Amino acid sequence: MGQPVRDYLLTLCVTAAVTYLLTGPVRKFAIAVGAMPAIRARDVHREPTPRLGGIAMFGGLCAGLIVADHLNNLNSVFELSNEPRALLSGAALIWLIGVLDDKFEIDALIKLGGQMIAAAVMVIQGLTILWLPIPGVGTVALTQWQGTLLTVALVVITINAVNFVDGLDGLASGMVCIAAAAFFLYTYRLWYGYGIEAAAPATLFAAILMGMCLGFLPHNMHPARIFMGDSGSMLIGLVLAAGAISVTGQVDPDLMNLFAGGERAATHAMLPVFIPLLLPLTIIAIPAADLVLAIVRRTWNGKSPFAADRGHLHHRLLEIGHSHSRSVLIMYFWSALIAFGAVGYSVHSASLWIVLVIVGLSAVGLVLLLMPRFTPRAPHWAESFVPPRYRRRRHGGQDEEAEGASDGQHGPEGSQMASAGPERPVSVGVSGVNGATAIGPRSRFTDRDRADSPR
Image 1 (cartoon, rainbow, N blue to C red):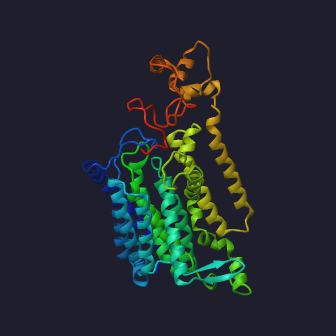
Image 2: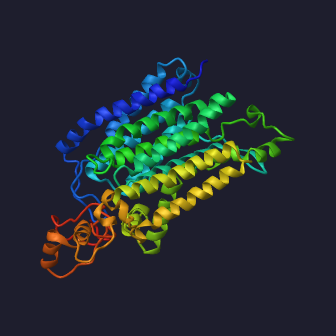
Image 3: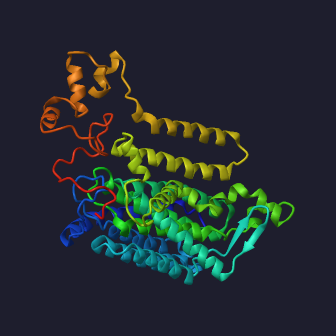
């Protein structure tokens, strides 16, 4: 068998192309059927935007599986394993539930039950965790019920983690694409580097998932022309979970030539190698952390864990002054750091420079988080090359007026706003917070209720 990287690249490109080409017609279809919910208090977009982007993503998934089935280096995955069919069955079910929710907004408990049923469908067809390698203990075989419960729990957690983070344009699709890229590098190394055939389905799932996200991103970047909706966020969450489940508990330590003094010692020595297997949620650590914080926050306030609010991580970034695009890029940065850091450590755990690079990049990430706390000023010689808000103030000069106009505090528009009535506190997303222009003013809309209202 030749090196299948070209077949994976072809599958990825076909999936991305089909998803991209289908998104335009799907957008028109969503507008025609009225899948454009009114703006809610927790939303950050300015105008009603069509959903149902998951329809195009599901089409890309089907196209990727069909193409892979007809490629010489990848068709063995379908012949030797039933996992691709299990993924397609579970994805079709979760996608249908998401489409209904995007159009009719079904109850959260019904969606949770549908997620569990979709996971159970995959388990019945063989996509399940069989055993776990635990350092210091060795290989722990799971009973049928234990494997089923662990698989269902992982699927539900991953789906809801991705769904919770889908709050800004391009955020969920970009973060999942980064996670899928890191996971693809890891599983491809297991399959082609060590010859472990059990990692082949997970590698295929990661390639297709990257294609789905890359094909949808051009339509979903700020300002988004269409949202993926629950039909898309739950779909890519399920595919991501399926890849982790497929490879977890399927790798034999003997095949990796790391056997040293017994099974328990070998498993302990392979701890860095098993990091992405034992902790598949590391590749979506940011969405998972957001999920846990949201549940704790809502429960502490006496609300349902499924009650929507405006306290997610991306909302916090907007509150401290980051713009919409910069908030998304910061979330991308942290996702890439955690995902590729875990994969890099699993390859070279003994290298000190891996830890130093991660620590250094983490420091850079903290600086980026604190950037809205101060307004940088360019030196005099560079003022002609930067926007007005970064120029030094000159009393009575034009730069001060230009700067005030850019911040939404002075100038004709600002004067009209000031003369319109008493000063109002600046809310999230309104231009004027440290120069951020997350979404601009919402003067066209009536005052909405608070974020904890039913709407």
